[in-house]
Image 1 (cartoon, rainbow, N blue to C red):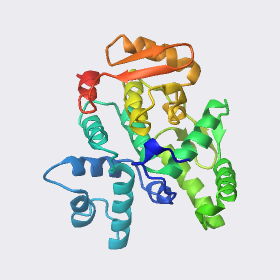
Image 2: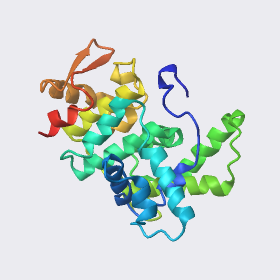
Image 3: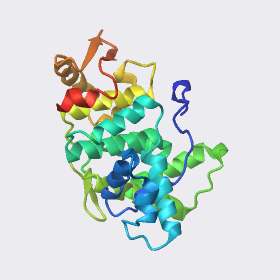
Image 4: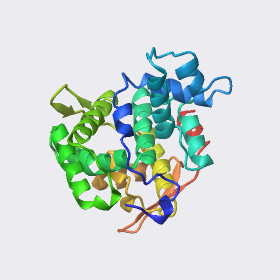
Length: 266
């Protein structure tokens, strides 16, 4: 799925999920983001020079550093960079920060985005209480069958690992619980998080103001049936403007990407 207004978003399928899903917890990512935006620090200093995460080999440090850079520290434009920097410097709650990690991963990694939209969220909204790696394995096998032209020679082992590591990461985000059998947590989207999602959605589809047809809508964790009423109430706070004509729910962002967090949290 490639759209012209997604030209600055990676359309490559890779297995970075395996590295990110293998991290002990999200603290590594939070510290890397802090180091990136600290003029007196860097991700390289954090990971390699100081080795704050006690990784045994230079190869492991380099591999994880590269994965975090590609996944969480790549930006479509200055607006995107401003948004991530401001989110992690404001008073967002831990659950909101985890949602931001999730949305940032989805923006920067096509495979993660498509599994999240087409498998994870589809299952979540279906009313099922659990999800298994078999759900993701089935999707990946069908994806490979339908997209042979991509030349992705993923083995059974690679597909199995991708499925396991994806669910591991979602568990670290507290979207799931359990070891072998993964059960969904109720994912509550605060008013602040929902507003921030609108900004991520516009980054993904710059020319599309109709949130109801934005491809990222499933990962808002708000159903199309509920989002109109929620956004109607939020629009009264002058955080954005909305117009619903019975078909399209058009959103106009009224704050800068740098200023939206101040408007939300101060």
